[in-house]
Length: 71
Image: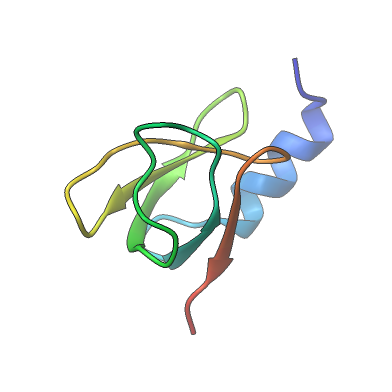
């Protein structure tokens, strides 16, 4: 389980509606690197829920996967 402060920081950083780009994800079903998507929120275990532009809904596990904010 992740620590509470890290989860709260993720919730403050990745706000619903924010655009992100996938940098790294070690999952066979991962969207291609560089895929962009819209943040839906952060769940109670600290995963970032993203609606990827390619239709995928795979969550980002912070600390294992990597995303960057699209400005």
